[in-house]
Amino acid sequence: MQKSLWLKTAGTAAAITLAATTAAQAAPAPADSMSAAAVVTLRYDDSRAAGWESAIAAGVASWNANIDNVELVEAAPGTRAEIVIVATTGWPQAILGPVRPGGQVRVELGSQAVSQGYNKTRIAAHELGHSLGLPDTKPGPCSQLMSGSSAGTGCTNAVPNLTEQARVESLYANRLTALVPADGRTVVDAR
Image 1 (tube, rainbow, N blue to C red):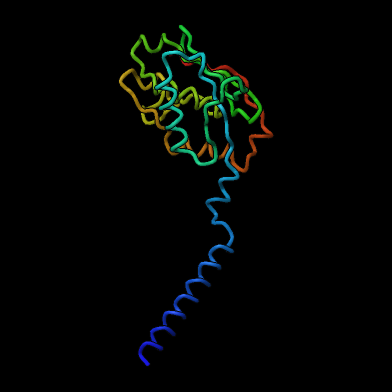
Image 2 (cartoon, rainbow, N blue to C red; image 1 turned 90 degrees about the horizontal axis):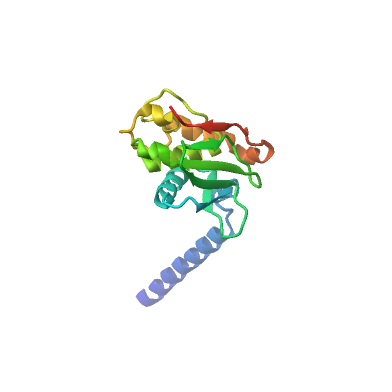
């Protein structure tokens, strides 16, 4: 009798487990996976930015970690990129976005700023911010990535603050940037 009760209980538990598993598989995808479809992927080409590779990678990682609806990815060799990054001997500068998928902006990472003591990773992240549609906020504190050189050479912050993050999120909300061309002005980050 006890064995029969155990089998009955085990059978009921197995049926409940099977029903729960089947229901979970049939349930709609969670909201997080739905929002993944709204992510705008922008490719960057840093093949002409020798000496800046680690700074660019850190700047890209900073943006990718702090905004949800845009993902910056390295373009495969020979493919078109929305953000073309080159190393120059002048001051850093970039075309002001927001760059749209299929569009193109240019970022120049200038060694003149580095020779004056500015942080390479902050420069790269700042210039990528221009590509994403953020203008300079000079003068400004080190906590504002887009304050650029006005924060001084001691500033190494390469993380967009909450206001900067929200602005980029807004510019790319619901993939609206696909309809909005880049500003097109070149922003030179000299003091």
